[in-house]
Amino acid sequence: MKEFVCIRCPLGCALTAEEKDGEVIVTGNSCPRGREYAVAEMTDPVRTFSVSVRVKGGERGAVALRVSVPVNKKFIAPIAEQARHTVLTAPVRAGDTVIKNAASSGADLIAVASVARE
Amino acid sequence: MNKLVIVGGGPAGLAAAAQARRCGVEDITVIERDKCLGGILNQCVHSGFGLHMFKQELTGPEYAARLEKEAEGIKCLTSTTVLSVKPDKSVECVSEKGLFTLRADAVILACGCRERPRGAIGIPGARCAGVYTAGTAQKLININGVMPGKKFFILGSGDIGLIMARRAILQGGEVCAVAELMPFSSGLKRNIAQCLDDFGIPLLLSHTVTDIKESGGRLSGVTVSRVDEKLRPVPGSERFYECDTLLLSVGLIPETELLRGAGAQLDPVTQGARVDERMMTSVDGLFCVGNMLHVHDLADNACKEAEECARFAAEYLAGESAGGELAAVECTGGVRYAVPQFLRRGARGALSLKLRVASEVKNVYISAQADGEEVYSLFRRVAAPGEMEYLTLPEEKAARLRAARKIVITLRAKQ
Ligand SMILES: Cc1cc2nc3c(=O)[nH]c(=O)nc-3n(C[C@H](O)[C@H](O)[C@H](O)COP(=O)(O)OP(=O)(O)OC[C@H]3O[C@@H](n4cnc5c(N)ncnc54)[C@H](O)[C@@H]3O)c2cc1C
Ligand code: SF4
Image (cartoon, rainbow over all chains, first blue to last red; front, side, top):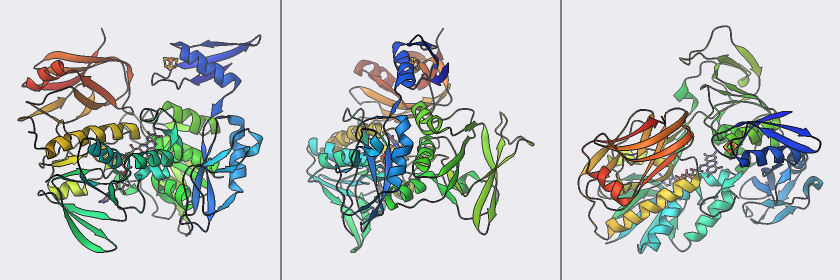
């Protein structure tokens, strides 16, 4: 059994979810969205996030990359690890795909801002 | 004579500029002290912006780029700081070229807010390197590519503190815990789940930092104590955390220097300007919006406010009257503040009030009362200080409120 706070609205219901015969049983939710959230958290908890990577020879020292699609949270650590070993060279353009299929997650990493040469 | 100067090129300033142009103002100048436009958004690289304005979840820089596009073609002076605004609406600026003064017929101030520093909360202990506000650390990591430390402790569980906990981990650091003085976090539930719980970072509610240790001039650890209901540290509850960096996320306060200089009235609760329905301060023709008026949780809300204000500024420039004498709005019974602080007796149209409750409450009506009688109410199953509430009164209800001798915004429990 797993317990979590529903994040779909400010009410923050305390949910519990349990898997029984391949089905997820949810309690504590006050509306269907809470059930949906608990099921997603039990089966495929996805996240959207950004990582900052260093940039050489640019007007600033870093640029952020975001995942192109939400990824399962188990990929957060390996993607962050790969980004930490990445150093880009200016110029970087907003929207550029900087890393394809990061840590084999299926998501690309996209630059969220431009960095011109120094 | 219809020159509008907007001070600050963050989301509020840019949204105001684009809307003022749509409303027919021809001579608009935006002044921004930074090299680039976008304000605080440039360093907020997480996603979660623009769900209302652009119906899409964007990162801060992507959101800023959209706003810049909407304001394209409007004169923007970057790397230019406004030193003062006079009641006659002359705007004194400084840039590489030196000092110069712009004469405006209306000014919109959109200078954002600043973080409360260590001094403002009075943590005892060593004065040493390794103490940063969360926003400063955010800028160092996301803009400059510099990690300010290896092992972090975070004081304050507002959204910036939560977001920086995750950022520190993603960039290869460690986070001991996040301590929050209050028994609840003012951060979004989503941020608690995705920035702390996902990484197993403890959230210590009703706890604060009571001592700072240093070694060789650098922070080497913090002592954390539980606090009682009166927020006093409980003797014997101390616990020491070894770390090299303390991040402070202990609140934001509106930037007020220019307001003070212009002689505008301030609100002791929001710590920003006191304004009327048009977001005009007590100085004629001087408007104030965004985080400089009151701290917003969402950039979308700051932009919405700025757009409303720009429309009123355009009306002001076109010579429309202010709408009669001022009537103060009183907040009681669990409502911490409401903006605007004043209504105009003769104003017309719907009325939008923004407010915050003082503590988390369940099953309440937010109630607008004219001379003791409720004219409008909004039901909330839950309302929390961390989430701004909107009360939008249709024209005829707004008229009753504007005409009342005593205008009160309060909470009423559901029977
Ligand atoms: C860390 C953090 C995380 C956030 N996360 C989110 C989120 O996930 N989603 C969301 O919707 N919102 C988020 N917000 C809130 C949102 O960013 C703000 O509400 C919004 O930026 C406020 O806009 P603003 O234009 O009022 O202020 P700012 O963005 O601060 O812009 C003010 C501008 O004025 C300029 N300025 C100041 N003084 C002068 C002067 N004297 N002369 C010239 N220029 C001057 C500054 O340089 C700055 O560019 C976050 C805020 C922070 C701090
Ligand atoms: S279960 Fe429904 S009511 Fe409860 S927090 Fe989730 S979305 Fe809100």
